[in-house]
Image 1 (cartoon, rainbow, N blue to C red):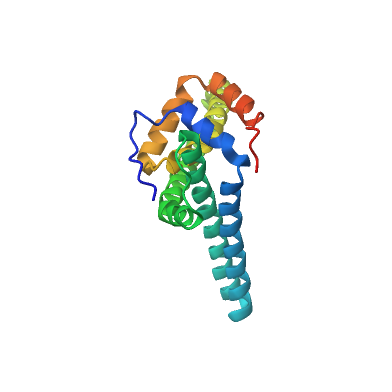
Image 2 (tube, helix red, strand yellow):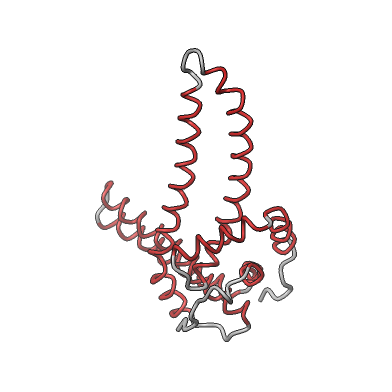
Length: 208
């Protein structure tokens, strides 16, 4: 199966980018399409069997799970291709996606909470600007600082959201995925964004 043992030494930005570049290979596309097809079949089954809100809710849950399993399963294939390893079979890829799904959910929750925390801090800061007397004084430095922070957070979020998934394909834990990708994002965000745009806009010629 996915027997590679992850380590900080072999998880690199270039490896993650090579994995992202492989999105035109037919194997990961097939894995993702198959997972989504199973999810859509589950949605249709529960809507027809149970009906109402309960059937629709269970079906939608299965569909969303299939998106995550397909994303992770296809990503595992991409990372094997990026390393030059033999590609895993479809069932092994789907099992890997199902096994890694809790980590993906945890990663999304943590990243969302981090962004929400920044939003709450800024909101409290602007609410403090309504305090009579000192509010206007606080607003003068707070507004440009908040705009600068938002711009930096936006750039970092793009990088982290795009690279944390491939880190999970590598088999990293949630904490390691965040630590590695945030470290990459903090290193040279401008050059990394340019490299991502350049590499993703020039996919490999091998499609099918």
